[in-house]
Image (cartoon, rainbow, N blue to C red; front, side, top):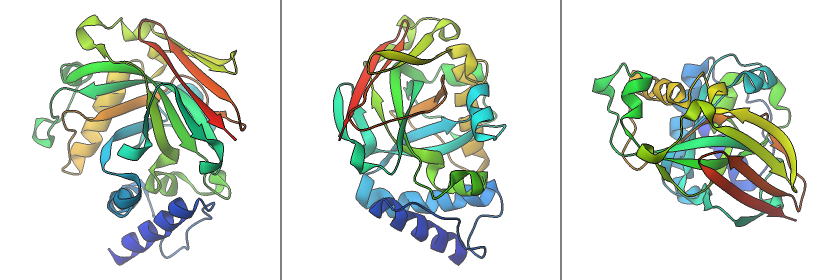
Amino acid sequence: MDRILTAAQTIAAARRTRTPLPPLAAEFAPQDEAEGYLIQAALADLLSSDFGAQVGYKIGCTSAVMQAYLDIPHPCGGSVFARGVHPSGASLHHADFVRVGVECEIAVRLARDLVPSAAPFTAEAVAQAIEAYLPAIEIVDDRYVDWQTLGAPTLVADDFFAAGCVLGKPVARSAAPDLLEVVGRALINGDEIGRGTGADVLGHPHHALAWLANHLAAGGNGLRAGQIVLTGSLVKTIWLNPGDEVAMELSGLGTVSVDFRG
């Protein structure tokens, strides 16, 4: 486990100083995604003093457009920390990130625990645990010397680009539209840059949530009531310039916005 901790410490130091992460030394780099998730768990403990408690998860690579972009054909998970969660209308500093980007997402907030002993989970089962849906902007950060050379295990170890989120007003599950018909529009400075639907997220965002619950259960972990889960982007990642104003419109769920001042 020493090599796991050493890898986590290396990543944590880069995160704290906003230093682009090069490939990890061969003796510490995760050999597979299972090791990547072990490093990710150790990293969460190391970063809690800087970024707050872990309050949820993000799921990446849940749509065909993102799987093609990252050349990873399956979902990957990462952590969401308290200090990275912002309300709609927030104004953030572009310089607080290495290379900041945004994604258009449907987030869920859980009403009850999804414990490992209840696995395997289906999309129908996890749907019953959802309290509300929220229009969301996932904030991602390309904090790497060259992410294309790192491979999925190291990206997983470093929370798979996760850098926070901006959340709109919650919509109770009982009042929510059919997620398959939700259309998400990504607007940068008022111009539409991307568009997708809830059906683009593994066929339905509930499938993504079930994947996460089963993934965590395989390691003896679960999801807790009150946690937020970002189910995956409906559009390809949009990289930002200083001063950009971002809005994500999700039909039936609402709009969420943020700007990144220079």
